[in-house]
Amino acid sequence: MGQIVRKIYLHWSATSYTWARPGSYHTIVLGNGTVRRFTGYDQPISKHTYARNADSVAICLACMGGSGWRSYPPTEAQIESMCQEVANLAIRLGWQPKDITVKRVLTHAEAAANRDYSLEAARKVSGWPLPTSTPQTEQYLALARQLGLPHENYGPSHWFDGWPGGFVERWDLWQLKPSDRPGQGGFTLRQKIQQYMAEGRSPTAGFNTTPNNRLRSCPVYVGTQLIGQGMLLPDQRCYVKFSDLARAYQLELVWNNPFRFVNVKTDRYQVKYIADVPLFRGYPAVDIYLNRPMDEDGQPINDPEFPARPFMQGLVIEGATYVMIADFCNEFGISLRVDPNFSVYLEGPSATPQPPTGEQLPSPNISQPELPKKLRDCDIFSGDRLISRGALMPDQRCYVKIADLAAAYNLGLRWNSAYKYVNVLSDRFRAKTLPNSPIVPGYAAVDLYFNREEDSRGNPIDSANPNPQPFLRGIVIDNVLYVLVADFCNELGISIRVDPDFSVHLGAA
Ligand SMILES: [Zn+2]
Image 1 (cartoon, rainbow, N blue to C red):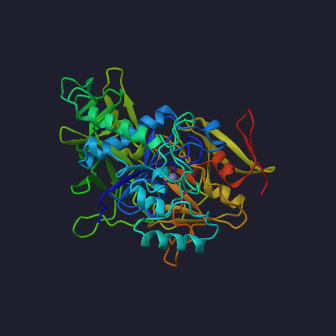
Image 2 (spheres, helix red, strand yellow):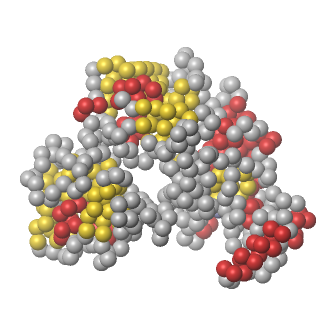
Image 3 (spheres, rainbow, N blue to C red):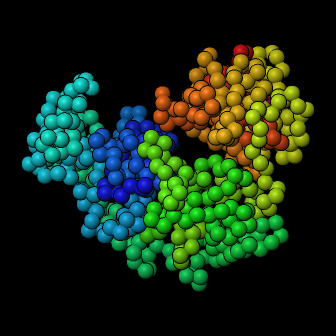
């Protein structure tokens, strides 16, 4: 069952501006204002806000890493994006601007200080000495609960209004800039959220979706067949009715009403999870999942440890769900051409490449496949040994068969056909798991994990690492899995040099 959202917590990540990965927060807002939603708001996540994770949502700004204010202070773009995203969620929850109080929308600094409880109650759990061990933390938690509070005060040391100080374990968004009054951050954010809510509801603000007022319409063709009319919206991107696309590509769409998400049911496609959330005032973005697990009554099966991840978001306009056409094509690996007159041409479903099937990875020994879209070959050397021939793809980067790299560096490879990923096994290397996705239009992407735990039947266990991340994504070219050689080397710490003749020289095994 889905959760009922009672509180929204606002965080910062203590990272650079580009940090974004699933597991800890529902949504992360990058330094440039891009919004990435990793978990639908109807699902709980188990570890964002100490002792407060149930029935709540966590939204995080990627910032404040390095030396904090001097390296990555919160940017204006990301603050505005976060407030707009919270406003859209609040509207969807049926909240009014007057409901945006510290009882419902809190910075982590405020949550840590129990600012949603009475001053009298908060005082009782403040001023405790810093806990230095887990047993002490447990004891604090028990004591706080006896006093009717979720936890001790582990927040900032002081506040402009004299609220009691804590031992400063968390101070997320206490201020938005160093010149703010101590503790001003949450107050400023709530005011902005209220403004966005008010503007979003106004009939003249945001964008107007009546057919006469969108920028223009764009006819959408699949192959030679006209399948619908998209609309160019004020972000100058073309949005198309999802049901028109689903019909053309034979995707089954299931609309879940109580929790407002769309489930795409198909075994013909994989998606890449790279789309950003489209942000429009007053238009909550609807999560779209691929094959989300559902029970017999059509309700989602949720697991706070392994929340299902939407691959893109749609906008509900005049009662229909629209998706950005470029995102849709990118996710599904469908090639796309937009003409100067804004007609959109999509590759037909029959030409879509399929993921590899069968229990084994395709053999590394099959003859060199034809790669019609590659720019050229590149010889790949490990030390002075030629180990493979790579393909320079239209993104001007060199891709190499993972099987050849695995053979050269003694890596085990297991194709998990049930879960459609590749497990790379080695105890000689470590992977850094830097987020990155190759996007080569028309090619399906496959996740590669490093030493992912599996049981004897090949099901992932993931007990040691509850939020396993793929360390690489490959692309399937003529049924063979290729990876970007630079990413592979980066991940495993192998040196790489590319010569002007495009030969690639890797550190010896
Ligand atoms: Zn936090």
